[in-house]
Image 1: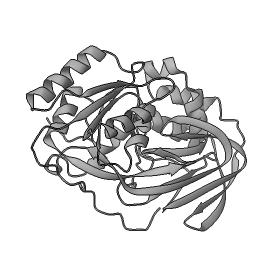
Image 2 (image 1 turned 90 degrees about the vertical axis):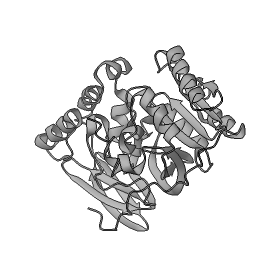
Image 3 (image 1 turned 30 degrees about the vertical axis):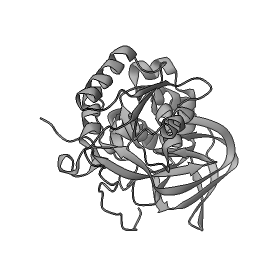
Image 4 (image 1 turned 180 degrees about the horizontal axis):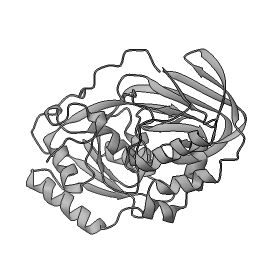
Length: 326
C-alpha cells in the first residue's frame, strides 16, 4: 500500500462572494437524461429565485459529447457549468473546464455518476442545485492520458474490456451486474505481462488489469482505492491479478455488493505512470473505451478543476459520500 502522506481533504477553491448575477450554463446529454423539460424548469426556477439569470442550455451531440459546449460556456462567461449525463458526458465537460475558473456542477444522469459518488455530490437534481447556490467549492486534480483528461480512473486490460462489452440495455436495468456478465466473458483470457513505471521506478508483473485512479470508488460502492485523494497531487495505481477461482469470485462479488476488499491487488502512488503490455490491450478513461494499445501513459494535473460540493460543515470527508441527512 502507499506510504506517502495524503493531504487533508478540504475545500480549496476560493469562495465566491454572494453577489450576483452569477452566469451559468447547463450541458445535458439528451440520450441519457429523461425528463429534460422538467429538469430545465427546475433549474431555471431555483436559479431565478436566487437572483441568477437563466442559464444557457447546451445539448451534447454525437460529434461533440460535451467538451466544445463546456468551452463555449466558459468563453461566454459562465461561472458554473451544470452537467447531466453519464460518466462519459461528465468526462467530456471536465476536459473543457480543466484549468479554467468555472466550477463543475454535477446533476444526476446516466448509470454511473461516479465522480459525484466519490465527491459526495447528491444524485437528486433539486439538492444538486441547492448545493450550487450555497457556494461550496472544492479544487481537485485531474489525470491526463494520451492527451485526454479524466477525473475518475484510467484503466488497461480487464476493466476496459468489461466496460467495452457490457450490454447498454443491461447496464440501464441492472447497473453493476452488467459488468459482472461482461467479466465472465474474459475469465479465460491470458494475463498481461506488464512493466509498470511510477515516478521512474519500474516493476514487472503479470496482471489482468492496471487501474490508475484519481478517486477510488466504483459502481455499487466498491472502494478499489481506499487511499485515493482527488486533491493530493498524486494518482493511485492498482495492479490487479486474480490467481484462482476464489479470487475471481471475491472480485466479482465485491463489484455487485460494493465490498471494499479486492484480492490480489498491489497499489502504488505517484505523479507519472507508464504501463506497457506485451500486446495491445483495451483501455478506458472514466468508463469511455479508447483505442486499444500496448501502453498507457498517465500524468496528474494538480488543482485543475473546481467542483461544486457540500460546505465543509455538512461533510467531514467529501470523498466518503454524501452527508447523512436523516
